[in-house]
Amino acid sequence: MPKKPIQPTYDELIAEAIVNAAMGTVRIYFDDQSAPGLIDFGLGSRLDAEATDVLEVSSKRDRETNAMWQQINRVYDGRVQEGLNAGWAVQFQHGATIGKGVSNRVIAFLVDLENRGITKVSADPVDLFAGNRFPSTDNLHDAATARKLGLSVVHQIGNSPDLAGRIFPSSFVPTGIARATADAVSPYVNDFLDTTTGANKIKKLAEKGSGKRQHLFIWSDMSHTSVGFALKRGWLPSDAPTVPDHIHTLWLGSFFSFENVYTWRCEEGWRVHRVAEVVDAVEPPSS
Image 1 (cartoon, rainbow, N blue to C red):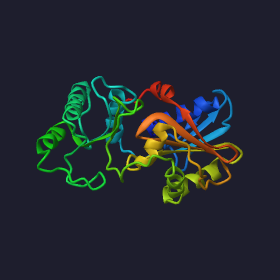
Image 2: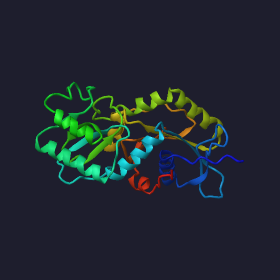
Image 3: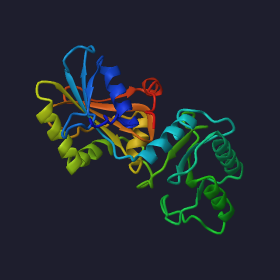
Image 4: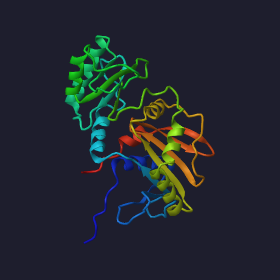
């Protein structure tokens, strides 16, 4: 009995849609995992054409996290929340329930914190924000409320016009306060390409994509807040990553935000592309 084809994940579908929109291509084939070593996507100018582009996507999120992030993006991404005067970074506990009812309570909680002048609350004993010791006896009640809402940490990040009223969700432990630059972007790419996963992606593209435009799409994970913030704000890196010559375009997205992606090409350097409308049109795969 033939093996049932395995469909692409939501993250892979988003990456494919972004590349197709930018390159004017459509899917010719995809890796259905019917054989080892297949390219994730072959793309071309029309359905009956030969593939002119090949795309590999790197994503480490499991299915439970994917499902959670589909809900988070539907509820929070890109929305200005009425009643909030500042922007908030909100970290959800793994497996937290996300939905309109919960989101209304989360927003009411943040409004109450603003009204009382509280900028940080943590229900996690690990010190996450530059030496602030939370939870403490001063905010045990707020920490308990956060925990009931499925939150690990809430942290006010600013009240400038582009931040006010926005909630920036995550579900991973940040590695620190995000820098107000794009200095972490190129090093992040270099570090990924030095991993076994990165090296295998590069090797597969070189071997399977000879004679075609080769694209590598990297989803940066939520633990690298500097990459996510830089991408969301549209900051351009000033340095170049070390990318093999056979890669036509390197793409870098972030689970922090699906609004923008980076591209890097040797001849033009880094660019930022707004892709929110493309992402919104992608249907999550049926479970």
